[in-house]
Image (cartoon, rainbow, N blue to C red; front, side, top):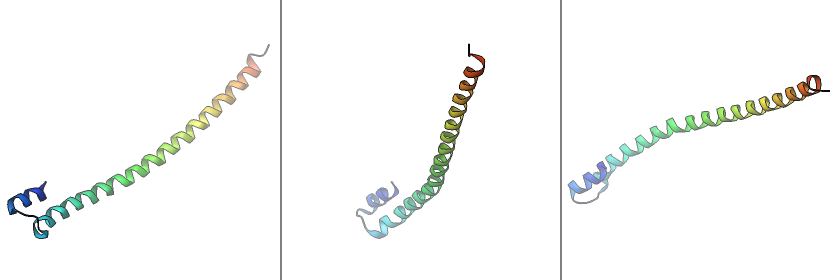
Length: 75
């Protein structure tokens, strides 16, 4: 937005007019990426861990129910 305001105030687009505002926007983008990339990596890691734990719990529940059926519900 600052770049467009500078173009409007100067009456034309030149490198001297646009460069400061564009560099400011690039810095903000870099900071955003520096925060977002580790956050996505952590999210993917914990999602994988939860899925693995879910599988283990489902296997345990299945095994436990089989044991209960075999030992307590057998006629």
